[in-house]
Image 1 (cartoon, rainbow, N blue to C red):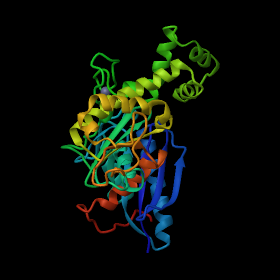
Image 2: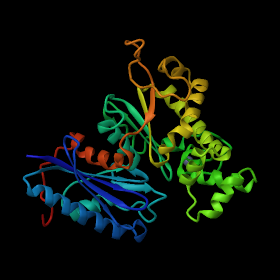
Image 3: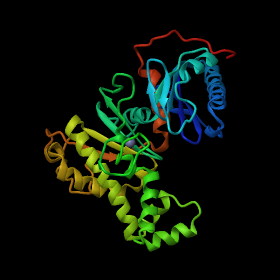
Length: 354
Ligand SMILES: [Zn+2]
């Protein structure tokens, strides 16, 4: 008998759902055309219907449903199952999201911040599968974060811990959606990469980027990356700035947590070669804990390869590395949530109509 769970990743633009078995095998993955812009009620109905369809399908083969985990962007209050603030989900604030989905499905669900879910996914099956403690920074439209300690997401008091994208890296920096200024998100998100390109063009510092912007109606951080790969100096400088901001934030994280691994994921992380050298430069300059634990083969720009330094087998090292699961991290982590939620051991309930 297969034990499986349903993971849901409610992104800013679409909705993805997967059935994942207890060994981490993805049984089926659906990307619905659900337009998040169509609003809360529409999305909740579409999500519930899609979950119900997948559960029915895999229960058919005598599968056992261990539960349903849903990753949502925004800060979540775990106790009440509400989204307290979400720039990507206007109209969802202070609505009983979890209760409404549970009412429709007739079974309990676990609501989780999407970046926390992504961290758990990388911990389970990705880059951090060999360690118990890790944190992940997700570079997407915004910058999300998650801290996993002893294999479990660190929630803090209400569920809002791990907002690593709002670590301050420049007190006088650009205003951020959270109300502060100069947060990591204002330098290392896809939105920030694009903004810095627009600023460089406006300042007359980036003629090639300006030409690309004029020629490409869909100008985005990807175009900036392509130009950096082609050697455009202003595009390269933008990624160095993103990497420096990440390095400054990571220096604090390393000093605070002394974890064995820090994972960088999300769409922007595909530009790893362009920004990661600056991360290591900042880490070496700003974190004495990093200097004391850096892999010996790690010169600035070269990531460590193992938790235990090969040259000194007993020496534990700090690894900063790329995520491995790509855009599936949040989906897989969401499915993992009910599998490790041993404190809420509920008898399997029947889905309405299933
Ligand atoms: Zn912020």
